[in-house]
Each structure stands twice: as C-alpha cells, then as structure tokens.
Image 1: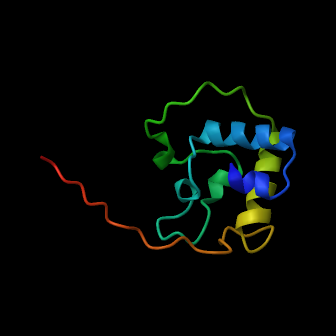
Image 2: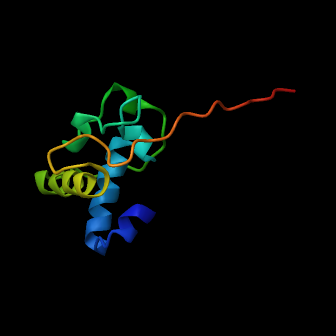
Amino acid sequence: MPTVAANGVSTTGMKILNRCRLYLKVSTLSDITTGNGTHIILSIFEGKAGLDMSRNIIVRKVRKLSPRDWKIWSQFLHSVFTTASNSQKLNLPLGKWFAQNIHHM
C-alpha cells in the first residue's frame, strides 16, 4: 500500500483499493500483469480474477464490491501504472524474473 499512500489517496480510497486488492488476492503488481511484465491483465480493471489468481492466499472475507469501488480501482491503476487512461500498458515494465536458488539439506 505504500504506492497508494504516496499518490495522495484518501483514507476512504485506501480502504476501497485494499478491499479490491483482497478480493482479487493481489499482493504485488506482478500478480496482475502479463507474464512478460508489460501490461496489466484486462480483466483486473473490471475486478475479475483470472485463473492465475486462484492461488492459496489466506485473506479475510471481503464484502461485495460495488461498481463504484471497481471504478475507483480501475482509475487508480490507470493513473499510477499505465501509459494512458484507456491503456493496459505499464508506464514502466517490470524487470526480469530472478531465479531463486533453493538449497535443501
């Protein structure tokens, strides 16, 4: 949520964005972008989780969100992360993936 606070979102707006984020089970920007990290997945703007969003994240139940909540969510994503108000393309593409070295004993 640091990005939300840094962009002057009101307390009420933060609560709405957080409910949307929890509903979609989103933790990071990479959770809602295409595999190559250049675009936000279109269905995310509308509050529709894709198949990839069904991972096992433990979240509290979120009340039903209104069309107004999803409009605020969409406007925030566009204003902060995309190149234009009708674009899915990220202002700044995500960096390359790093391989995680897991050592087992």
